[in-house]
Image 1 (cartoon, helix red, strand yellow):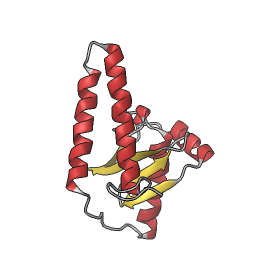
Image 2 (spheres, one colour; image 1 turned 90 degrees about the vertical axis):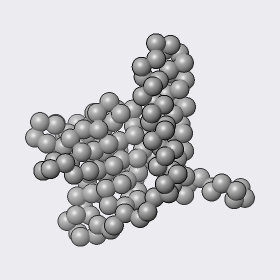
Image 3 (cartoon, rainbow, N blue to C red; image 1 turned 90 degrees about the horizontal axis):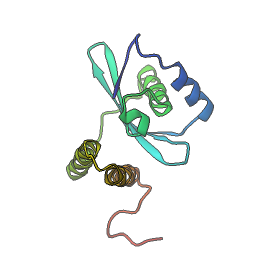
Image 4 (tube, rainbow, N blue to C red; image 1 turned 135 degrees about the horizontal axis):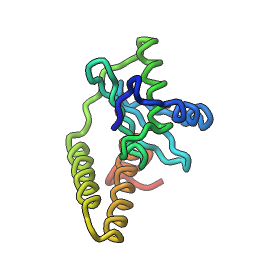
Length: 150
C-alpha cells in the first residue's frame, strides 16, 4: 500500500496509465479491478486516511508499496465517481472470500521470510495465481463452483 500525498510522486504511474488505457471495473466505491499488461486483472482498493488516500494494489509493484499504473487508473475512476456523485455503497462481500484472501496474504508474508528461495518463489507464484483467480471469480470471469462449463 502507498499513501497519495505531496511526497508521493505518481507522474510515472499516471503517464503509464494514460499510455496503457487499462479497463477499470468498479466493484463498489473504493474497490476496483484494473486490467494488467497481459490481460489479467489486479484488485485495487482505495481507503481514506485522514486527509490522504491509501491505495493497495495486488500487482507485484503494489505489494512493495510502489505507485503503479493500476493504482493510477483506479484513482482516476475513483475521482470520476466522486465528481459525478455516482459513488454507490459497497455491496456485501461473501465473508468466506474475505477469509480466503486474508489467508493467502498471510501465506505470502510467511513465504517472504523463508530462507529457501526456490520454495518461497513457488509459493509466491501460487498465491499470486490464487489471488488473481479469486478476483476473476468475484468479477464473474470464472464459472461459479458447481456450474456447468460452457
